[in-house]
Length: 243
Image 1 (cartoon, helix red, strand yellow):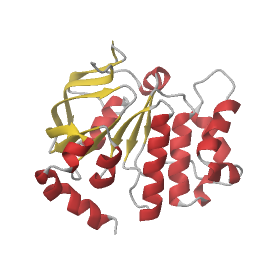
Image 2 (cartoon, helix red, strand yellow; image 1 turned 30 degrees about the horizontal axis):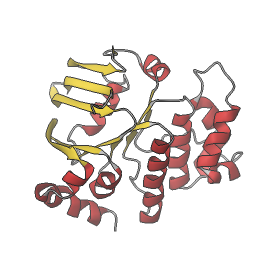
Image 3 (cartoon, helix red, strand yellow; image 1 turned 180 degrees about the horizontal axis):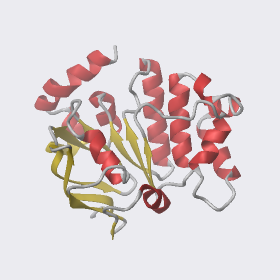
């Protein structure tokens, strides 16, 4: 049975000051799945997410979301349509409380946020315990939970996550991967950029390998996990980085 693609990128080109960071990338994100982009630093993975989020202007190409061309749409329109980005480095508001950070995530909504705040607290009980704590005093893992919770407050259909495991202890990394799976089971589609290729491919339905602005390989998470060239290039490195 054909899968319904929630998001499709067609021949995307993005340049920074004359240097081409993304060179004709095309990919699809089926509704309800976890899709991961793996690859080395500088491969163009984060640039792709930022382009989808409306934070970077495309040189050329087309972005289609729910069968609608959203190419060039401003970020607030992208969020209203149901796409949110959890940026690299968490980027929580350190001088605001946990609950204030969550409410900021729902700033475009006109309805009551209480049910969704309770839903986030159910997903992340630690955040409920720290509702009135300043976000800047949370641990790295708790800040990552808050960043995901804040993204969920806009009721997204698609969450993009940029390096959610970066800088976290291995035991917390496993927690974050379980959180991603839980959010996906709640019906949210995930586009995940992750340097820890080993863990990302284990939870992903489908994956793309980025190399210097191009897609060099694609396949199911298990296919890429078992591919010898992927193992040699990324999986050994991913394990070493997170020892």
